[in-house]
Amino acid sequence: MTPLTRLPHATSRFISQTAGRPPSLPFGYFAVSRQSWRTWANIINGREIGVSKWRKQKYSTARLHTTSIQMSDTNFASGEVSVPVPGPSAAAKPGPEPAPVPALPPLTPAQFRVYNRLAEQMEYFHDHFRKSWNTLYHACESGRRPAGMSLKQFIDEGLHLCTYLTAHHNIEETHLYPILGRKMPAFRSSAPGPPPPSRLFKGVGAQGKRGKEANELLRQHEAIHEGMDVFEAYLRECRGRERELELGVLKEKMDTWGEVLLKHLDQEVRDLSAETMRMYYTLEEMRAIPI
Image (cartoon, rainbow, N blue to C red):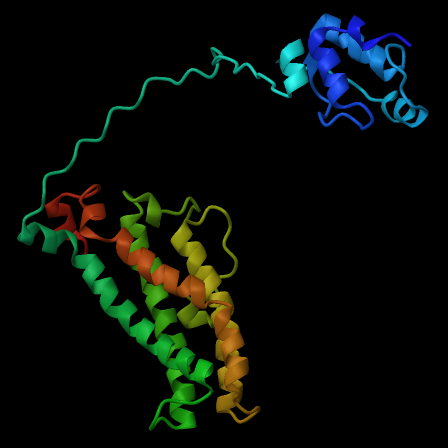
């Protein structure tokens, strides 16, 4: 057996420290110096020291793959590996930064009222929808109808929410969105032709599925009405005494479209806020919007 003194000092120290047990360093994916590579390969093959049969069998099939990690004899013995960080390539060089958008001057109170007019009008209706939704949903969560509200009144509250919300979306898609979509991408749809037929006059969900050409607000409308159709059908069955109203079942049907409804009510008002509208319209143009 070749004595350990013939090995490089660092490698000899490493072998002495790990004698009788497998090395603690993983050796699947690093490269060593040429001398250490040769020595370590000899160690694995049992040529430099007396390696027991089970260690030789275990490590003789190990694969050493060369990577960008460089390890010296000293680092190999101590377990420290230095990984060079590649410099930025020519393709990764960032281009020139875009010029910052100049800040708009603050609005006077009168200007703010003009620019915020549509948001205030929209919030008026949306607040009513939220209150109606919360009345129904809180009753479903608690398992009790509001005090003083009969079963018929409770069912009618839900049906009225469906009717008013359908009419509201019909007006938006027929009159408001086409006007705003001329300048504002948030209200624009790339679908050619006039708006689709109204749900109000052809039944709930008559507008059908929307494709990718619809903006996010229109896709939210579609998601709302998909859930609301099932919700309304259930309430109509209860109203006609075809089945008994169960608040737990009603809650399950509200959960399918409640999140997108509340998100839509907030997002639409933000998209109509004064700070947003002033980016697309002058004061004169805002006053001319026939809504």
